[in-house]
Structures are given as structure tokens and as C-alpha cells.
Length: 213
Image (cartoon, rainbow, N blue to C red; front, side, top):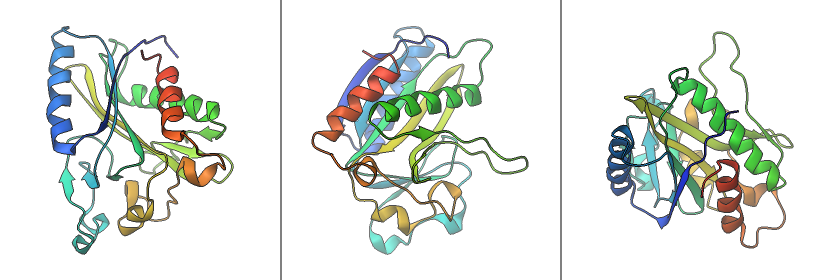
């Protein structure tokens, strides 16, 4: 894995559409070399985001009252809500890199962060002929704890990952998460016994794994 220090931005709860506006601005700055590679850590109010490959039958029942927003990232349906750490990655890729290469790097860095939090984790290879597997799973229980959906434009990445920390997991069960009907979504709170100050610890571990300061 190459060295890739990032500038760290941090916020608490940010409306998803407002976050998209700022992310678009950050991407433009990076494309013009007006800022360095950046990791933006934040959380969102409850929202489902649908990637370009999301199937209609995977969407949630609207009676639950959680909005669904279409987004230009890769991947399928994802849920965001309080108690989840979202990381947006605005990174200029090298000439020898593509977006799939960088997604693999993101997975490995998040595995490193989770290992530091005493949650052994792994990325998974995609079986031949199967839809692309992205994200991170726990080794002990085989549950999915991180969702990833990214894109690149003019050589710069956008969107990123969502790591479930201590939020309510119920809304994941109201839709087909990540295009995987059988997936069991989990969180740090579900996997470890000591969750005092867990969000602060997760933020610090993620920032360290991405060389972000």
C-alpha cells in the first residue's frame, strides 16, 4: 500500500444533500490542485442512498418515512443515520490507478482501523461471475460492518465509506442493503462489549489508518 497522507476534515451531523454540495466543491478544488487529498469524517440524519446499480425491488417501504436519495456513486443501496461514521475521500489517483484499485486500498485501511479497535476484519474477493463485493466484514461473526461506494471524475475520487458504530441497525432490515438479500449488517456496538466513547475512538482509528491529520 502506497503512502498517501490526507488532510482531515471533521463534522458531526450534516444533511446528506448539503454534504453532497460541499463534497462536489471539494472535488473541484482537488481537480484544480487547490487543495490536497482529503478525508472528511461526518454522520448523516436518516437517509437511504441508492447507487447507480440499485434495483427497484431493493428499495425500502416508504411507510417507514426515511427518504431515499439517488446518488452518482457506485454500489447499491446504503443506509445512513446517527451513530454511523461516514468518510468521504477526495483523492487524486495516480496515472497507474483506477477506482477499483483505490476501493481495494480503502478496504484494507478500514481493516487496519477495525483491527486497532479489537474487531478483526477482512475484505472479500469477488467469486468469478458474481457481482463485485465491496466493503468490510468481521472475521469473528462474518457480518458486514462497512459499506463502500465510490466514483472518480477527472482522476479524483468522491463518496466513500460508511462504518456502523453505535446507531440503530433496524433500518438496514427494511431494504436490501448493498444488493445482498442475505447480508447481516452489524456495528461496533454489536461486536464489542466496551462501547464507552466508541465514536471518538473510531474516528481516531480511522484517521490514523488513512494517515489523515
